[in-house]
Amino acid sequence: MVPGSTSWVVVGLDSGGTCINATVLDASGAFLIDRMVETPSRVQEGPEAAVEALAEALTAIVDLSQTSLSMVRAVGLDTPGPASADGVISTRGSTNFSETSWHGFDIRSALQARIGLPVIYHNDANAAALYAHHRHFGPAVAGVSSSVAGIVGTGFGGGVVEDGQVIRGAAGMAGEFGHIQIPLQGVLEAGQPMPRCNCGLEGDVESIVSLTGIKNNLLPYWLTRFPDHLLAGEPTDRAAMLLREFGEQDDPLALAVFGQQARALGRLFTIAANFTDPQAYFVGGGVVEAAPSFRQWFLGRVREHTQLRREQAAVATFALVPDLDMAGARGVALAARDTVMAAADRALARTPS
Image (tube, rainbow, N blue to C red; front, side, top):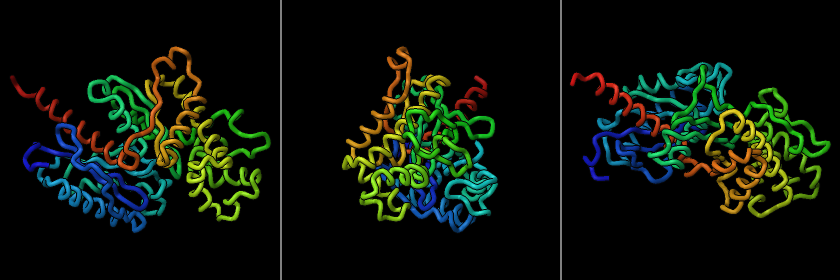
């Protein structure tokens, strides 16, 4: 970037269990950082250390983009959910924020007080959904389009975007698709145990479409069908992490597991089709951070098992969330820029002519 070429910028901070990913977006809508830039999140050390790590990440990414803190109008922040629309971590804890000190902690307000700048919050799945929506539709169409996204990770999250805006819900927990129970006929094999989620529900989306679902439910069953498989000798945690590599090699056990995930995700999108009737369906997260042939196979299976009416199929698209691990930081940067621009528009409307 050439210093002075833009009047102001916003920063996006995506805070996870181990790392913060940061980016900078200028007033024109151009990202000034074109790659992953990560620093330790320190969330296991508690809220005070984690907020300080976020402040340090802000300073570092501004320096890297050759801008200055005086140019930053707002900061977008995302974390794993569940959390309120205002960035208060659930009183029951949150993915990667499970220590008691995090329960009910207002991370948005704490960061805002620390850095002295407005902070706009989304959970990480909503942030990725927002970025996928804007990247897919572009600035001319995003504001009049709708989409849903399913984000596969340790758990399973998602987001609903309508007219370019994330649907937050009354408590800020709209789009928590992981805990929707779905019909499992045709998803599970005959005699396959009912998947159970860590939340206590049986047969919800997260119990199948997540790394935790693979580890706790799918892989133990399929290893009984493939007792001589190479993964049979591995600890379950490690075997679940390795499964994607086997899927990229068209391994029958891995394809059986990921095929069940795709069918379950298709069932979820079928519910979305009848509830919100979106124009686009996005799939993101770890399951698509794989070889192109595998992720296209997975997306194709999801589409195959999403039951759309003829009229819906004629206008709907299915796509992968772009830019993988950068999507969260970029999504909250977009949200921060929209907030700044909306505030400027309101101020202009109040100015006497």
